[in-house]
Image (tube, rainbow, N blue to C red; front, top):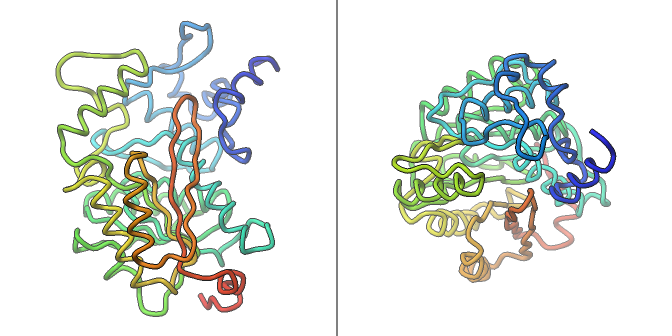
Amino acid sequence: MNSETNKQLIEKKKLHPNNKHINGYDFEALIKTNPLLEQFVSKNKFGNESIDFSNPLAVKALNKSLLLHHYNITYWDIPKTNLCPPIPGRADYIHYIADLLSLSNKNLIPMGEDVRGLDIGVGANCIYPIIGHQEYGWEFIGTEVDKECFNIAQKILDGNTNLVESVKLRLQSNKRHIFKEIIEPGEKFDFVICNPPFHSSREEASKGSMRKLRNIGKQKSGKPVLNFGGQNNELWCEGGELAFITNMIYESAHFKTQCLWFTVLVSKKDNLKPFYNHLKKVNAFDVKTIEMEQGNKISRFIAWTFLDESQQKNWKKTNDK
């Protein structure tokens, strides 16, 4: 890859500066790491090596290669029905969380097992704990409402000795609860991370998949192929993200001293205003909206804390993990 192409990729992607994928995919290196990827790689219309991102098998093979090559994950496997996330975008969320934590740590990103994250809806792929631990050494608790997804994620952890002691899973038995019955009395977390079910129904999720296919030039008639997969609880819930995040905000107020930063991805920009109103009602001390860019896509997450500036600065001193 020549320097001019490199420059174009960086300018187009605008990923976080610490993101390992900021220069695009090095397919030659990835194929050396995982030879099974080669069958899915071909030249696109621009003459560059790529995969067919509408093919779920190709996306899964790419993910396996990226996780092995960049994050030393030797075992990672999920059924085709489960969400197969794009790794660069997931990594961006983790790196922006690191920046957020640095604000109360003398502008230094806190590293190591003393930093604990809570991943709400870890999913079968377990992707955020994988990247967060492998990049920064953080420990994680991942929650899941679906027992099958829980078991698949646990199998991934069991298959990687570098994860099994640092990432633990908890099954949420009540789908209406987010933090209740999960966060234990006196337990502290430096951050909450969450990729919520964005859609309110299967039909809405299918329309979203059709938009994805159109965006990558693979519009098809009939039943859409979810190129990133996804089951019910991973893609949709009653009331969609508006209901889910609203509930999350009000529940967070019951655990205001047990977490430094609560964060959640917001898919629909129009939902930000009602979320700000809810956060004002629960007396959040500080609220931030952090935008992330991946190619032509702009995503965002909101972050809020109930701790004042003094409490934030003293978080590490008073946080007895």
